Image (cartoon, rainbow, N blue to C red; front, side, top):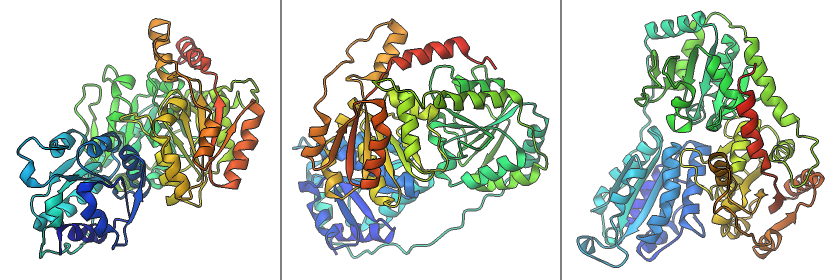
Length: 545
């Protein structure tokens, strides 16, 4: 069979269901082969969006999402989404086309060295030089993307796609994953927790990736330990669990940092450095640390664990629970931190000022979603409010771009979430800047028959940059712009748009949109003067517990 047919059969053999992408001349053999397969090719309007959709598939299913682009500009357009998956450790496989091999040693139309270019944003990547290599390369790429996890890349030149091969897909075997944790380390970790006066758990993205939320919740129930999550770890423990102190992730010294500052022992579970640097919460390296993760920790003078329980996070928590035959009492100072974070959201539930306060918008969105429904946040000032205040109750219900912090993430991700989980309500929140970066995907959403709502935090500017500039220089520089009529824009794509005119309109309109189905855009003017007010509040009241 020809190389492209073998390539597709290998993808089918590995369980690939969808490929998101934009076709090109150098990938026409591959798309022709896909037309005869069970894999569904989802055509997007930009390659960056295709990568975000593949990333969302990987994060929701814990299996690699796959995206496709042609050579040159198609491949360069993929990079932002691939890098986003790489830093947030989402399993993803990027496929790019390439010129015939005879052109790759000299200057050629649209040719750039894509394999070299993708090295810095992938765990592994390779070009295919002969069709016989396809089965091994596909297996290796998808295994690495799953096990590490992260982004990988495979390049298929157009002549290799057309050459014949006698090879077939590799026989698929299942290998048990069992890690035997050292009993002495488990006993030592248990002893450290018992002797600690104010231990706290820091739960990160690895808990969600490793599907270890149930084990974490059981461990917390047995031990009585308080839990702080990263933004990416939201939902690992329910926000209404009495042991939940909230989520951390902003550079200002937030309330939540009081919990970490008071702690004499931090048990990190699935915590990735890229989520929130340990230099923010352990600047002098004085805190004792128990590291529970699938990976060895990064070398950092602020993060030197006393004990490492490496391997499957679920197994580590299960075994540690059996060694912790005691229950710690939640210190009153931790309870005050928890109460303060809850109050900050509830204090704005009846705020009817307009433009709307970001806290009020978040409160209304939370009111419209069930415990298992999905919120997707783009990047901007609103993301920090979502990360701090939005209560999450289940894993994989709050998604955001964190490691790379890429604007334009929300709309493509909402499309993927909508057709992957059609039984759930989906709301995407985006700033006007981030929304405009991939707005062309409204056509994709309508074409696919998606149902979700985009709530635009409209301040006619790059609000997060303005916030940082005002903190640093007491003025904003180059952050203002104008916007189109978002209602007319939505309607031009076949979606529905609503301009919210008062604070009392958002909640009923959002409920109406979610109940009606289809693609909706709600344009909400936001009062981001709250940003600087928050900075001053945290500066003046930090850790008064």
